[in-house]
Image (tube, rainbow, N blue to C red):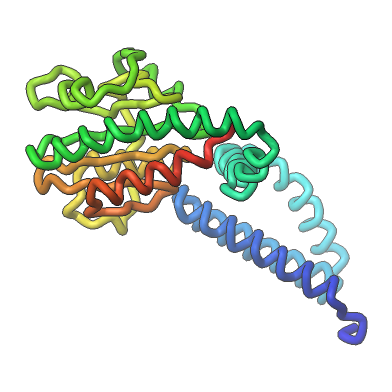
Length: 263
């Protein structure tokens, strides 16, 4: 049997291993890791009984359970499967390939608009950090944030530094919750964001940081946090928090991350 093992078999094993590793990371973030491990244990038992021991009766029963269970898995993990397929299509290299075939003029115009929008955000965050004014700004990329927008107050305004600072001013009725920016416009403020329940988040981070991590885990959005206690700027991307950023770091991250949006 091992004499027939070739390059194609090695590639097959590597691809399956990469797929399982990616699914493992996805399930760990979505807090479904125990269910995923249980399914993998069941699959190993099924393969051992059916292929190694060749128990026909028990193997046929497990075959039926696997065929029916596949439908159940799709129903049970529909959100995780959707996120997996979305992340696959929205991968930076895929987005870069799409951008490569788009017109250079359109790319240049969009890049200029993004740069003009990023600078007021960076300056506003810098001023709010100096005054220790808490803020939470979420910038939409490829996945729509419409479900989050409807939870807040619609603004639909051009990005403006003073407007951002006034919204997050301590006495402003809109300072609680998150500001959503869509296509270089302030879409809404005081929006309710999903909160991350990751037990590994340091206790020093408050609700704003957990909300930033939560929205970055469920979508591909970029979430900016200004701490009210320390005045530090952080950015959450893909479920990971980049803390203690300077204004230059923030501008660099936003310019890089927002450049991979779909046309």
